[in-house]
Length: 281
Ligand code: SF4
Image (cartoon, rainbow, N blue to C red; front, top):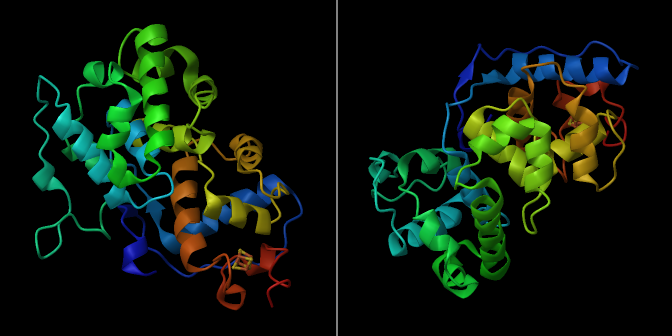
């Protein structure tokens, strides 16, 4: 697997293990796929708790752009509206390249949430949207992203009573939190579920373009372009405790083997259980 796709800690030694035959039962096919992804790629390991609001804002900023751009927008917001009380985070802990700049390849938003001091959310919530848009411009789509951030902060201030997502999760659980947050304009199901797995280790498999494509090609769902439907359908099919690894392994697998344009089916360890293998043969 190319190093640039493998930013995660993994446990287990990756070894070549292949599917032996087709499997009709869709849940069993999914479970076998999970087993084979774990065996061939290793099991990605969650890197521990982070502040969920910080991860969510970083994830909003990362929509349709790279992680380094999202980080630039976030750092600028924090520089202009710094928190009064520092939490002791150290941005020098971010992965750096030889020139000392943030490593564009190795950076993950999880690292950013652990290393970068957040803005003063109380202050940001009182700003006119235009000022937030100006501050985060480096992340792109400043109008829609500033609108989503402001709506989120207003909802936390007015309905939750504090600038934190952990109480929402405690009170409403994973499914309820996904539902409530994704009702805010500009925050989708994928953005919330990514936040919950990265920040709090939730047992969910967010569905991005790679997860959606591979799960459909494997014939486990038939959801055309509707990623949220894929998320809803596979949620209850995934064995407990295995969704985080599935999400990350499908990302890696979708970028390296089952790519959008040229899947390498002939060399794919899932090919004997994948109904799409003959389509690309
Ligand atoms: S056999 Fe082809 S389509 Fe099926 S999972 Fe493997 S690479 Fe993707």
